[in-house]
Every structure is written in C-alpha cells, then in structure tokens.
Image (cartoon, rainbow, N blue to C red):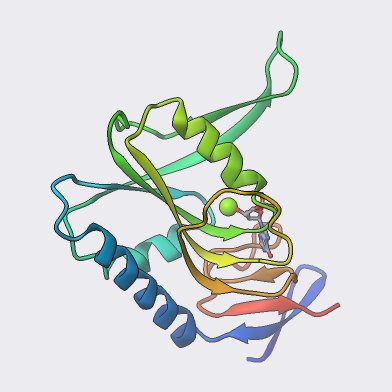
Length: 180
Ligand code: IMP
Ligand code: MG
C-alpha cells in the first residue's frame, strides 16, 4: 500500500522496512566498533513509546555485553517552582558511573533529548550517548552531540516504525510521510 489514511490525514510511503533495517544494522556496526572490548557493561535506555521497535531491532545487532531498560519522560509544573520539572518514570537501574546509550525514535527540534540529557546528568552517569532512528536536520536547533543517527529525513511529519499520529501508526513496519 503506497498511501494510507490515519484519522483524518493521508500519508505516503517514504521508507521501506528493508531500508530502515539496513540503516539500523549499519548503525549497530558503529556502536559495536565503539564499545566492543570495553570492560564496562553499557546500559541502553530506550525512551518509550516511540523507540520500542527501533530498540528491539537495534539490540539484535549489538555484539557486546549490555543491558537495556525502558523509561518514559514525564513533565509537570512543580507547585512551588516555576517552569517544568522533569522526571524519568520506570528507571530502576543505578546510573552512577555507567555508560548510557539513550535510544530515541526521532530528534526533531532536540528539545526532548535536551531535557532528557539534563535529567540523566542528575544521576551521575560516566557517559551519555544518543542513538536515534531518525533526525530532521533542518529543524534541529541544539548543540548536543547526536552520536548515532540511522536516517536523516526532511522536515515532514511521519508515522510508522514506532512513531504515531494521535496514537495510531506505531505498528507500521514502513515509514509514511504526511501528504499536505
Ligand atoms: P523534539 O523535542 O522536537 O526533538 O521532538 C521529539 C519528539 O516529538 C519525538 O520523540 C516524537 O515523539 C515527536 N515527533 C517529532 N517529529 C515527529 C514526527 O514526524 N512524527 C511523529 N512524532 C514526532
Ligand atoms: Mg519520543
């Protein structure tokens, strides 16, 4: 199917599953090159919901001893403070002195990753790196190093391979782009 309707919008096929998974395999090779032979056991931290499919596929290609955990970012307004307070939900691992590889679905403006990085630093990890399935380079505004990027895409809204439009589309094995 080359076009699909999700809620009120129509999307066109943009990236086939085979192309996505080849890019993930290539990305895993880079991560393996960087971490194989190290004495420590890195922790992959997959940020739900969007990264579940990418994380599952990526982990199949990782060739060094590692752990994986799944977290969610929750943001709320503190009663007595101004601005957002951010919390990691689901974190049961101790991060002190650990090598962390954050697994994200997509970096758009970079705001979400920036917030996550600042939050993670409070747990005193040894290092934090990012592996993201997708990056919209034309929109990315931050200075954070994006260590591992599988695919770069134009600034269009997309769904599939974990990413949703109002809850739908996460199950699609291919990636679809919004037809305007
Ligand atoms: P950022 O904070 O602007 O980098 O946005 C990152 C978050 O926005 C991602 O984790 C996604 O949940 C969501 N997002 C950004 N672009 C898209 C898209 O094209 N489709 C679906 N979700 C998106
Ligand atoms: Mg996300």
